[in-house]
Amino acid sequence: MDILQQTIEQITQPDQISMRAMQHRLNQLTKPLGSLGELEHMAVRLAGIQGKPDPKLERKAVVVMCGDHGVTEEGVSAYPSAVTGLMMGNFVRGGAAINVLSRQFGAEVCVVDVGSRLDPTPEGIVNRKVRGGTNNMAKGPAMSGAETLEAIQTGIKTAHELADQGIAVMALGEMGIGNTTPSSAMSAVFTGRSVSELTGTGTGLEQAALNAKIAVIEKAIRINKPDPADPLDVIAKVGGLEIAALVGVILGAAARKVAVVIDGVITGAAALAAFRLEPRCKAYMFASHLSVEPAHRILLEELGLRPLLHLGMRLGEGTGAALAFPLMEAALKLTDEMATFADLGLPSPAPEPEA
Image (tube, rainbow, N blue to C red; front, side, top):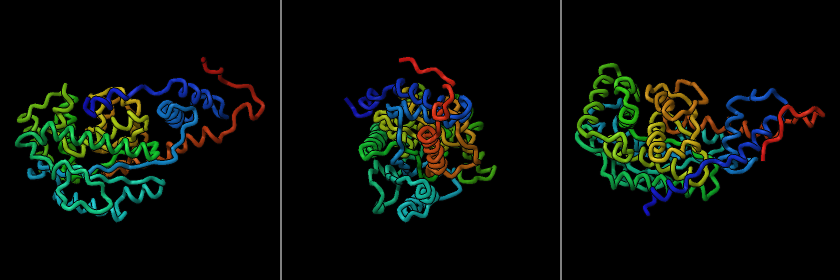
């Protein structure tokens, strides 16, 4: 049995008993029922994911998958591909936005080179390069089926290693100049929406360049004819190596009962692909924020996930996802430390949960 299929078969639904126990605990706290909104939902979901009524987030990680894209030859980005490698060095030195936020929130940053053109891979970055960048999807498939599977398996392996180290929640990040182009292409194929509706300015394109980007994506879909019913075919033909690896992280984390936090449009495209491969993985996903990239809202609607934050962000790297960490920790702190009605000598407002 291949690693992907084995991982999919290991994904189960969250533990309902633990979820009911957490909900009962929340209902006993000195507050109106449900008044903490999404914080209560997060606490309940984390209890189900970890399979215990008192979940903990002692260790957190941001997984940044890196890869380059052949489609940048078409002028779809305001920055050259070399910036991918420069930013990877920035991650190692701790100077990127995601490093700053991760230090602030006590999270580890795991940077994996799954498909950059940078050679050699800098020390401090996990080197699991499948190949040095994808092919130009405007001229043919971005990757072969074998390369797609290898990248997904890399993500699964990464998730398993982090879970084995005690990581309880993984935020998804990425670095790859041009990667909003395959994200928009995947979104269009999976949702049936028009490319023009889903495509944004990415790194900051002017209108003429945006129109050209839309035309490139439409051409790539027309030439490659990805099958929307076959997620692996979609990823291979109009996706990216780092996107495929993120699909693997999501599935691998779900198989190990670890929560996953989605960032922006690139990780959102990976999340929808993972969901199409195995719908049960959705129970392990949290939507951190709503990106200004237009496809992101559609992707979250397809997944049925509500973003926690609306900050007008579009940086990537996992920056929006990292901002969910303190909210998750706040949710669990409230359940641990708030007084109950019984502590005040008052009757319980909610009945005991059924066995």
